Length: 258
Image (cartoon, rainbow, N blue to C red; front, side, top):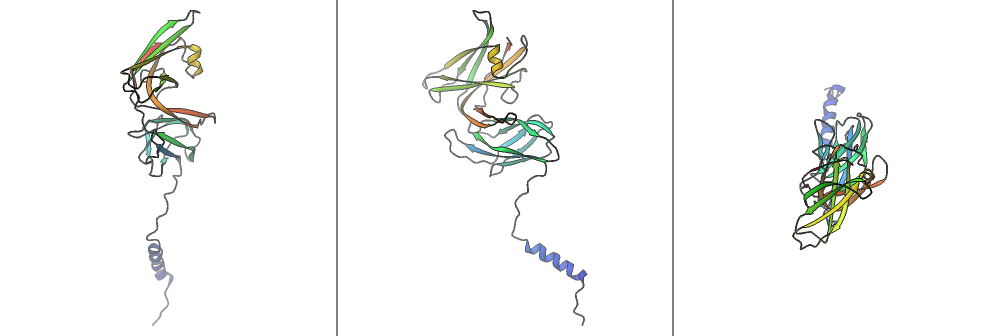
């Protein structure tokens, strides 16, 4: 009897050996070949680590919307992102929404890794229930806008902080605003209401990056917030702070830009 095995008979046996020798092993998920990838961490307002999974990451300026969800390790990968400079929003129920602007993705056929681990925070309780904008003329003849807020009761602490977002469209929000201003005040925690007011001339708006032409209609909306987190501005390379806001905004107000 001829006991010689030909190559044609050996090949199926070799294939079975390779298949079964790999059983029980799982390679790590490979990085996507193109798109955006990065990492987040999540903490409570007191700095206690929270689960990192289930955060939705959305490319804000792409239609139809591109989204991804973070893994338990806090990683995410967005595929099919067109080349350009984008803004990303990070959100999950119970968390304050974080917006990262200036995300450069030079080539659609390559992978861009974001440099930082972005820290997300539990949503704060402080809310702004009212916002009023009133035009005024200073004693020196300068035109300005006075903004007045009313905040909810009970106050979470003696410190009351809020952020005012500016834009040129009535849908202004933390997602659509072109600039923002953070302010600090004080309040008695037991007070039923507390309010603050501040005034801004054109130079004040420009200091915070809002440069709508004089005489045009502009819009503002206010949110309460409790803490900042720092990250590297992807356009300038400098450290900047994001005020993680409560997600219930004040009514939007309009005003004429001085």
